[in-house]
Length: 259
Length: 284
Image 1 (cartoon, rainbow over the protein chains, first blue to last red):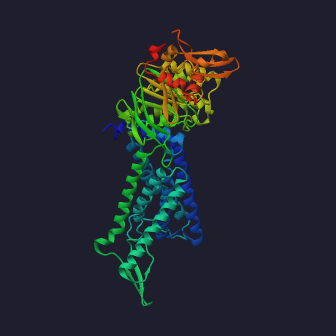
Image 2 (spheres, each protein chain N blue to C red; image 1 turned 45 degrees about the vertical axis):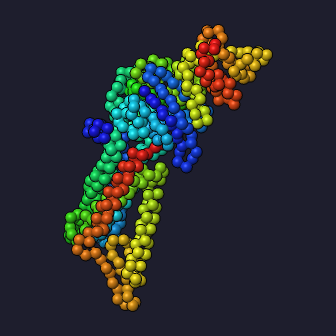
Image 3 (tube, each protein chain N blue to C red; image 1 turned 90 degrees about the vertical axis):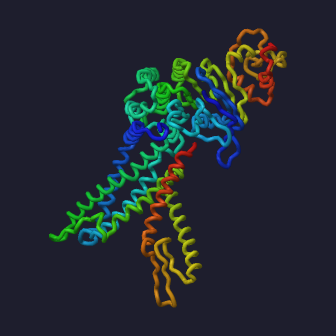
């Protein structure tokens, strides 16, 4: 057990990571706040008022996924580059402890900080951009209409992929992981399209796997086949499975990393 | 302490850099690992400390595979690479956050080493010169008191007085529980420091000998060209022929590491053949 996970050692590792990186993380949070303020402020200016909750949900998701992907792609920067990686890999702590520190910072703490920053900026924008006496409501993360909570599921998938990419690619992990992601998505979509087309025997429209099958019959009737019953949770389930697989792959990559 | 068993290593998609190496390194010794540029010295060291994984064979530290990088193994090892990395922390902050990972770390000794090297403790490490950073990390490595201390080209980047201080400190920190491995291509930096020389050449360990033993069985001397044919190895120098001969007097000779290295890695294998004779000890 001592070699797998030790709480006192994990605590020391966590403190070391914090001491070495808190300044850059704080700066990152500042940049995020600035970018959010700029985009939401500009949107309010164009609209002549603060964005509605639907638009807030869209920007909440976009910034969370984009910012999270960028941040997580660099979370294992200490393990890339010869001199840095030697220092990180030879530090007497287990692979699991090193992994959990990176996971906590890039997943849990990122989300907590992101939500805090988003609501702070959103509240400022909504307060400043109220039209007359009417103030737009602030986004409710748990409201069924906006489905903002769905972003968290997508974030888990994006995070796991970025975490794996940050260990797999030595340099420019952010760009290379993004390219790998889109290439993989394209490949899976093409395979899915070909499979459905040969199975259903109709002229299909292009759609992402597990979501729906869209086709037009006789150039008139448009059909959309969507999963029903428990199958409708298939996309969510697939995202969770994909996340778990990439998290495991990232851990395996850390254990096998050599210089 | 460290046991290398039939180790073969090559980076993926490339030919083998190390082939079927067998080596045992014991506590209480300072080993000098010599080899030409690109011979694989750093790669061997990385295999020893678990930063590279052999294609075949294994490295064991006290019976534990180093490739697993278990914390119980890592806290007994300190590896100082040629290019050191320091975070943007002050020396004091770095020690406060890192020393606790090494159970035997000695803070008082660390302060003393830093003082000897004339490196400030409270300066931000990333703002120090490369030589100062290296001296800081050498002092830290020595103070960890790990059983295995591996130094890859430690004197690169050090000024002349610092090299002498380095030799003095290394010699003073050797204990019966500690094994020090120093890899370098600057053999003069190891003069009067190491007690065993290991030479890596053409993927193999071609020499692993105690210097005292070598001094008893070899003579390093300047000879006239007429006597050069008696030498196991000879090369021209300003003073005549620098030669290595069998030691027939029994009086220990001062070892010229550079000449020894040249002899071992030369195409003429007379010295290697001589040393590999099982009876060479008796023959003199």
